[in-house]
Structure formats: structure tokens, C-alpha cells
Image (spheres, one colour):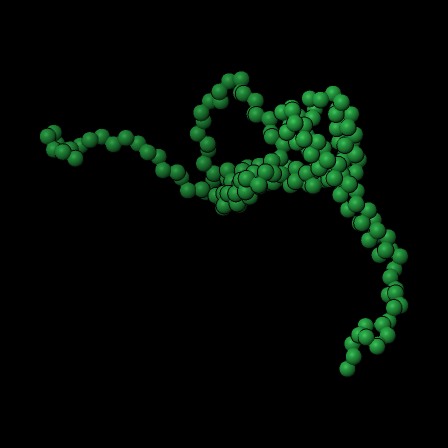
Length: 178
């Protein structure tokens, strides 16, 4: 039995019918990939220019006036082509992870079960940090004008009361070791 396309057997060369919407979608996706590749190529060329400058003179390419125009052009090309789309995606991932961590930190103050989820998100953030994914660094919290007075939180109605630790007087007879 011969297979289609085998020697001596004619192949069916009719093109399969495709919808024009599918073709347009595929072409748009290909164009997006081509733009991203061109942007990444521009960023790679900029990095190579920087490396060559550092290797030859010990100064980054920004330090050479004749190269600044080429660097601006490469950066503009990368930006307009979308070459840093991957970086924007990773920044968005880091920001979303930080938002979830903040949400679970707040929830873990009242729900002990939420602490496990918080630990998992913190572990993911630590793993991403080790891989070099670092989101925008948050601004340090403002210093309070006056220290907040220490107040004991009111127990929730129906909640078990917390243990209170009090000093115990030593009631042993003098001269006995304890």
C-alpha cells in the first residue's frame, strides 16, 4: 500500500480552505512577533555597543559623545518596536504579586489560615527575586510624627480569651532550692 506523497503516487496539492479571519489573526500575531524581535535586536545591539565600549576604553557607551546619537536611536527603535514587552510583562507580574502579598498580609492579621497563603506568595516572590525579576521598589513608609500609644486590642465577642502572664510569688520556705 502506498502512502500519499510516496514516489509514484500523486500528492493532493490543493490548498486547504481557511477563513480570512483566521489568516488575518495569524498575520497580526506574526507582525507582533516580528516587532518584538526587532525591538529585542535593537536592545541586543545597544548592549553589544556598550560591551565593546567598555572592553575598548573601560567607559560605557554613554560616556562617548559620538555614540550617544546611535544609542538614542537604538533605544527609540526598541521602544517603538516593543522590544521591552517582556520586561513590562515581568514588571506587571511583580506588581501583581506585591499587591497579592499586601492583601494577604492584611488578611493574615485576623485569619491565622491566611498565613500559609502569605508564606507561599512570599516564597514565589523570593524565587522570582533570585531569578532577577524585581518589581518597582516601594517607597519607604513615612515616619510617624509621634509614636502610637501602646493599646491592648479589645477581644472579639465570643472569642477565646488570651492567656495573661503574671508574676508568681515565691512561696517556698527559706533555704530550699528550687
